[in-house]
Length: 576
Image (cartoon, rainbow, N blue to C red):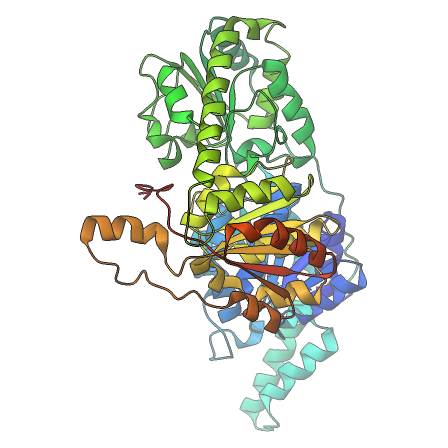
């Protein structure tokens, strides 16, 4: 086996079924070796998209997603995506090519200090300098990505370690020239000794079965404290975030545990869809209003950051429980009554077995009040959809999609104003079927996330909702989707504006500079990339265009260029 084969053998043993990439000579043996082992090599049009695709797979499976990118600019192109994965706490492996070990620091093509760039953006970074180290280092990288607070791990493997030994030797010796002087001979001797060290003991590696990862169960004392709080509660609220579904194979058991607890629940981030489409326990609106009245608040899987107003708008008299894999996040911005250092999903399963059956009857009236508020807000939204609009009312479009989207569809969102509207209205269908950027708020995730989701769920609809501004970051991935026959339906909310910024910029500063776009023919662009393109300009066409898109998606990607009109639905929505 050459180094590329060793990498592929570890990926296969670790349960990796997709490898996302953009080709490059530094990493070709990894791609070839992976293909030989039956791993689906998905070649993207941008390294950032390859990293976003790996992020999507990590979130949806709990198995680290993997991307392989070439040295230098190939790696630097991934930085935003890798930082996004770090903040989203996604288990992921970034394999980076590098210049040959013998040429480091000598001005070789694409030779930069990659470790210095990547270390701040990942959970851990490893550099390999011997062929025999490739397998053990890569196995350590997988363990690191999954243990504790999950995150991306970078592994740098120089090009000479990946190719067959005789090829690497020929390359290196050619660089020494044919100089027969004593200095030339000394250089040749040094190179031979260096290559001997690099390739020594390279054979015999056998990948190990991945060890069990600590599930990070909650301590009995903490569980008892939380149980007592719940038993005495009259107005409890449960808020569940992405980290709670980090152990993807346990999501059904986690959902059952939440139902057994019976606490009125809000789901956020990657936890959206955990209770299915219409579970009566789940509330979708007025979370802030409920938190102001609650007497017990349990926040599982994310900190008190801007998404929860830094914890400052929760009832000051409420008893607060935080559950997190990160000790620092347990007390971020607001001190909890009980801070539980544990995996959120495992905590919910443990707690459900301790809280006595029938406890939820104490807060039945509270739950009914919250459900009534939720239903009233849904009625308001439906009324908004009927408001006249010059083009398509985005809420009307969202309700149309909600009615027609497949029951097992995966939803990807990438954008600002339009996407926030869709996210507010759409109901995710199932666990691990909702993909948004996460706390980093990154634009450009859409193409890569859709590629990753479709590679993983080949038989399911994948819907990606793009703002017209955000779409330009990864529209080229339509080519990837078309080449790989992916069933992606992309809806571009086209209002010719960076509207989320324009709303407040014009109001506060009186100028729309930098926020104006053109209602481009994105459906025509889609055709150029091998997808199908549809134009939607009026609400009366919503049903027919959506039905046509679903039909066309059976053979490949489809883009709906939807001209949306202005509404007041998202006024005052700037986030800081």
